[in-house]
Length: 447
Image (tube, rainbow, N blue to C red; front, side):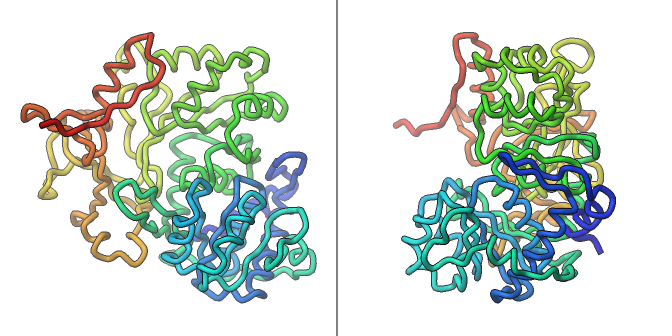
């Protein structure tokens, strides 16, 4: 049966001496990581973790974060990454809704959690992930790890729940998206296949790992036995320095981050020629950004990745050859690429019927990596499905070659004079002007 743990088993066996993680001044091999994961799983069981229970983590990106993604599952639990940008009431809601029984907390969030403790009766143990003095009321992860013995993999796999990744809550309360072991395993392999990374790649992990997409980059490095250089938070100059210093080859960014990096005044001071692959998402890459990015990273191939947490997260990828401003593929750069291997895309109308090529409707996906639904929200799960299709909430269309073009969120559509207008379309027109660096379009009601 497919499981997240298979990746670590393989990395520890085949790539034991390879550098697994670089985090600040600390480096660990895959053999080291596997050893620590087996001990961490033992300590989690020792403080009360039972099979299927949820373990929340509130931390910036770190090597310990990656370790916990594996150790919680190794121990038989379900990992619940908490968005580090949430206000305390939202943190409390995620913890309550998930029913988490253990909470792993890193230094920047200890005071926040201490202030919330009285409102978190379901949390049985608070575990400190930092390296300083143990806060009052917390157990010290590193101290317990030192004394722990290794334990065998609990063996959860297939349809067993591996993680709950919560949505941002843009359309109401955040919802816990259920990710199974099989779904995560397959979607990571779909992403690896589409992007073409190998065990020789050296990843810079920048996106927050509380997002499914950020976590996927780190887990993909484990799947390959490659190297993950982990940044706690996005900082342009730190990223450029690490690329040069560590000879990194794989760079994941959202389009706005890439824009900030390639247009930073200090970019010419760093040797970034080692970069071979850049994945980006959140929006298509404007032509002026691509031209500048090709100047800064002349040997890099660019991949646009479209997805959402419910989709696994990766749904489609635009391959490098379609990042063209002229020639037969020039028009494809405006698309979000083609569906990943093993999945299918369709455009549906309101009744769930498939629409023909070129007609705008709701983007729908089905495949082995798609989430089975929302945690404790059966009605919402049913509403998000049309037969086997997951309705993404995004509007768009497919062309005759199966390339996906995204209009906007269905609920963001503006109706003007009886016509459907998507904010993203207006933004794309505005961005053609050189004077405009960034823009955002929203709809208002006028009487």
